[in-house]
Length: 224
Image 1 (cartoon, one colour):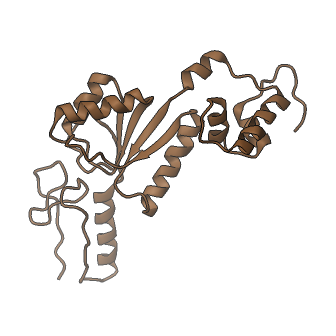
Image 2 (image 1 turned 45 degrees about the vertical axis):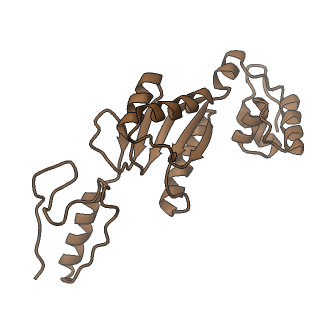
Image 3 (image 1 turned 90 degrees about the vertical axis):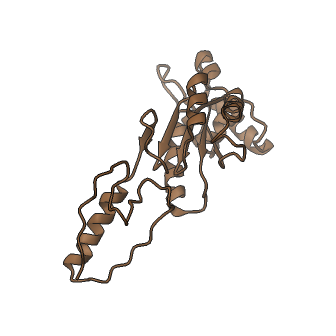
C-alpha cells in the first residue's frame, strides 16, 4: 500500500483491505467484539497500526452497538438471499451490525404487552431499526415501535393496509398481469396460476377480481 499524504486519513475500509478481511469484520475488532478469531484480530490490529488508523471518538461511540434486525420467515430462498445481500451491503457501509431473526413465537400479534416486551428487548440490545422482509407487521408491534422510537421498514409485506409503515414492494400484481397478457398474445389459452399465501397482499382475489387494498374489480380477460 502506498504511503499516505499527511492530509489523507486512513479509513476502516483501508484497514480491512490491508488485513484481507471484510469491513464488517474490521468493525467488530474496532468495537471489541468477541466473535472474531484471535488470528484475525491480530491481522486487523496490525493493519491499524501499520497505516496509523485512528477512529474519530465521536463516530466510534455513535456506531458502537448499532444493529439492524431483519425479520423473515424463509432464509434459504433465492429471493431472500438477494434482498439480504443488499441489506448487508448497506448496513456495512453504515457501520451497523446486521442481525437476522425469525418472527418471535410470542403472541405479539394480539398482545400489546408481549409486543412491547419484544421491542424493548431489541432496543436494549442496541437495535436502531427493524426491517420486516415479506412478513406481516402486527399493529401491537407498530405501536410498541412508535412508543420506543424504533423505525420499522417493510419489504414486500404480507399486509400493506397499514399506511403508517414505510414499505418497499415489488410490482407483483402488475408483473403477473403483464406476464399473462404476454402468453395470451402468443396464442396460449390454458394458463395456470400458482398463488401465494391467502393473506399475502400481492395476491388478488380470483373470485372477485379485486386488487390488494381495493374493492373495485380488476379488469379480467377471459380466455376462450
